[in-house]
Image (cartoon, rainbow, N blue to C red; front, top):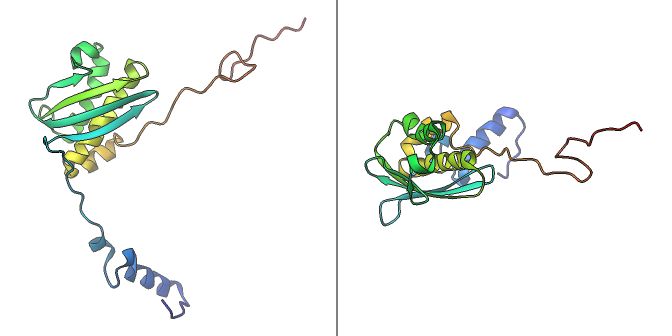
Length: 168
């Protein structure tokens, strides 16, 4: 762009003509469609995180069997609320019962682990079938929930709580 840009309209025209380093293309044609990412066994892999828990998740087409750390989902996550959390990505994407899930999860408690597996399943689903991404993204399942426990500070009872004040 050796010539001078004097107005805002000229700037807008110059930017749309030079998107992606390709001259004279529209912004819509530069964006490449997402491709499915699978390994040699037909599985998609993703990691999910929540609080201190980290889950490694593999999904493949199947009957809807979910295995977490070598156990059935009902045995590992005994509380119905945690089982419901794991089922959310499949119901939102409309593929309930169509994928087998194998997950290994470490760290944190059961609630954080369930959230980590949910995050990993959501990411793996969108890698397996990119057409599911808009529904999962709209539900907020592809965003990592970054809330973690605040560290304890020196001179405090907990992270922010002070010791009881004594006047005498």
